[in-house]
Length: 127
Image (cartoon, rainbow, N blue to C red; front, side):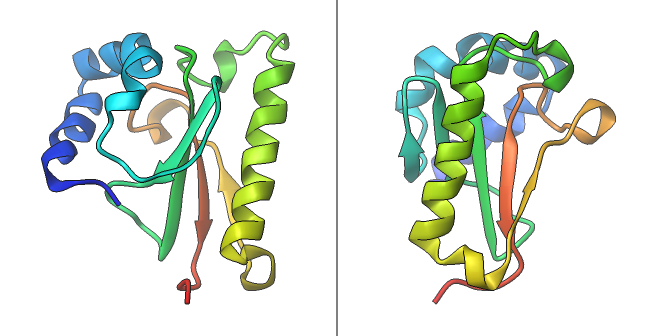
C-alpha cells in the first residue's frame, strides 16, 4: 500500500507538468517512493496501486523514461523479459493463476500518467 503522505506524488504525476517530471525522474528517484515494493530490478518496479480500482491492483513501471507503448522502438527486449518475469513471479506469489488476473497497458487518453506502466489486476480478493 502507499503511505498517505505519498499520495500527493501520484496526484502530481497526473498533471501535465507532473507527467513530464515523472518520466524524467521516476527511475532515479523510485527508491524514495513511499510504496510497498513487490518486485524490483534495475529496469522495473512493481507496487500496489495507490488508488486501486480492483481488489488486487499492482502497477509495474519501467524505470526508463518511456511515455507509452508507441514510444518503444523494439530494442527493449530486456525490459520485455523483465516485465514478463515480474508478472509470472507476482502471479505465483499471490496465487492469481487460479483466481484469474489481467495485465493491462493503457495508452493515449486512457493513460492517466504519461509514463509507460502496466496494471496487474484481479477481481478476486487475496486471502
